[in-house]
Length: 337
Ligand code: MRU
Image (cartoon, rainbow, N blue to C red; front, side, top):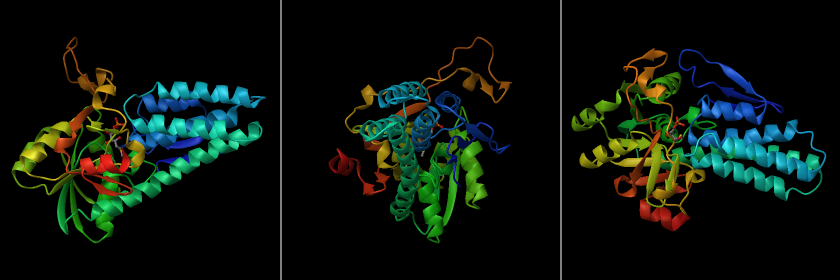
């Protein structure tokens, strides 16, 4: 399953707000449409945000009528600014934009040469993502026992990446290695990425999955039902990991129950020069909490807190799985820091 396709003058993406009831593909034609799709979470998940942001710049480049190199670079900077302003937490978005801008600045030749360099870099980011996820899967599956129940949170699957997934890449690789894997997926309020997306993509692949509500995690762990936890990440800083709200509670519970807690993420999610105090956690619309879909579940006028992510300190993390291997937190800093 691939969640994004470059058409040459448009970007084809699966509208994740419509899943699982409808598979609706959208064609995004300019950086404004890309920014809207990111903000409204039609596309989401850190690695996919990186690829889509890169393609947003590719759209700016192919649509541009700039007569000079300087003019095109300016238009690309403007498009970058717009896309950067959508969601602040996942570092892949900023990483991919920087990579594409660098390729544009360094391209030698005329306007056409810059255009080609931008599209080439965006395609490269997308292709590399799938390759990195397969390698994450290969390293991660070695940690999975022959028969295992894996708890995961949110959606760090094919839908959150260009393809294959990070946490669900580990699950897929374990299944491909002939292991008997059962996934327990948390529903992941408020936007239900676990219920809507993880359950959907695992069922589609015929992988054994059971859905629980977020407040059942302590119950399943205390019952001895979980062998390991594998989640994705939006940004890994030197003192810990930012991921979907609720990850921290799961990590604390895992430690209490002696269950290994793994984070699976490509190196494009690493931001080790920063500490957690420097990272902005996105605060989203209160409506996501007061409503489930179109239905209001809370009284009008109630105050709401809606942070999209939380921070899990390194002491709760058993290891981080990247495309280069499996690293304990101190080893990760030595390898990439
Ligand atoms: O708000 P979302 O749905 O973009 O959040 C997604 C997550 O938190 C994922 O776990 C993370 O981006 C890793 S995806 C491989």
